[in-house]
Image 1 (cartoon, one colour):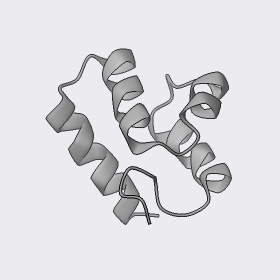
Image 2 (cartoon, helix red, strand yellow):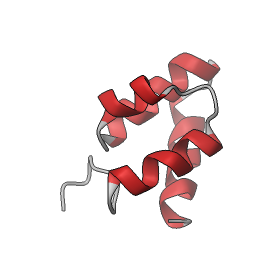
Image 3 (spheres, helix red, strand yellow):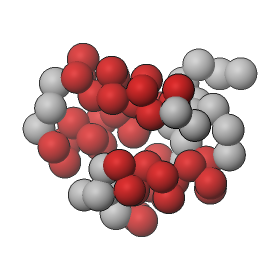
Image 4 (cartoon, one colour):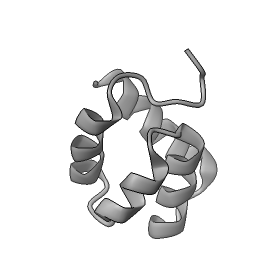
Length: 65
């Protein structure tokens, strides 16, 4: 599997992603389409967090799903 893709079915995961990062809109999540890099970038943009901090959050998110 491409390491830049969120594991599993993105359609199922995007609802969980929106619960975790509530500032992400449906449009944001549709554009991301499971791209880990785009998810990290969008979270950084919306929340003003460092790349390292967001990568840890996404890693935890992936482990929980």
